[in-house]
Image 1 (cartoon, one colour):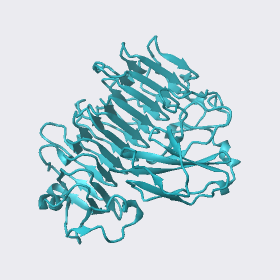
Image 2 (cartoon, helix red, strand yellow):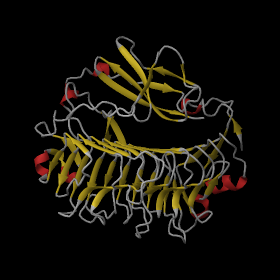
Image 3 (tube, helix red, strand yellow):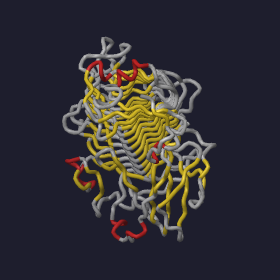
Image 4 (cartoon, one colour):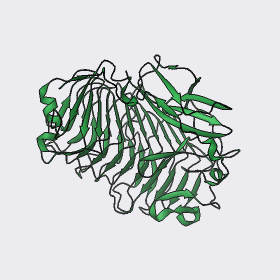
Length: 472
């Protein structure tokens, strides 16, 4: 049954659903499975689909979403789509043939096809936002086309155990698109393939946990095969003893794409290698225009192996991992002890090409993030700031920011703000300030493109942020 959005919907959908329809999927709903709704051929552009937290197995899991600007969300827990040998269009569990589809809180597993590249989500359209999803034991978690257009945003998702074990399939494989934003994610244990592979013209890869851990056998942890403008900031990256490739990160190794900017900015990451003496942290293609490597921790027997033209500043390179004085390196907690050589050893980095290069967040396991404490006069090296700063913070300053509606379309409002001595700013997904805003009035966003933004509150040196999703 198609329900118009004249009834009240919780704030996360008010803006999105003003003129859209809502469909409910579940055993007790009007449509018992994603496949039943797909075959009914009733979904239109801008509609919302809620899926109850049940197992949908085989053909019941399959769907092609050909409409634009859909919002699809698991409710009451996380629904699990289990391919169990079935596939649609010979491509996987779900095919996104429409543009700018948003999917939240769905689990995808078991996608296999004869071509050995079955995907949890196969993107044939342009643009995608995936949040709070789990992709595991597929031939590809996400596989996209080569549209050379669109923005793909992936946040708070887990990718594990994906790949056919032939080196051609990966935890996720982003084709030639305009831009990838990949943040607050956990990608691990790719089967021979890469934990993240992207051919996007621009890559913002920040605040993620990308690891082999003890038993993983990925090829590379991050592969940017055709170069492009790439920022890697605030990630924790670990190459395990069973890694297939000697280098953790590859850049431009399949040829630098013509007519694109080839620049790699590698800032405030923590990298640990346990592959052995032949390991290298990077392999970067000659002809790359600029490589800037600053404020990073490199631990283990691997070599940095940066090209001669690269600019390296304020990095700690240490084969003896124990001397880095991380909280619990064996269990992959790379927070700093108070006497770590990384504390206060970094340098402030001015924005480059308009991109802020002071990290705002740190990855928090599992698929979450925390505000990175303000460092005062100096920043710590690596993906974490030593937490002594928080002990002196007046907890009364930590107001929760409520942003509504969220997702928003034309405008949004803010509540939960103490207006005394407070500054509110709107940031883009890379942390660049768009403008200061007045929280007492509706904030007009009609001029902004769809995507992920942040509302940042600063009060007496204490910063809090809330995520805002803007939809078309």
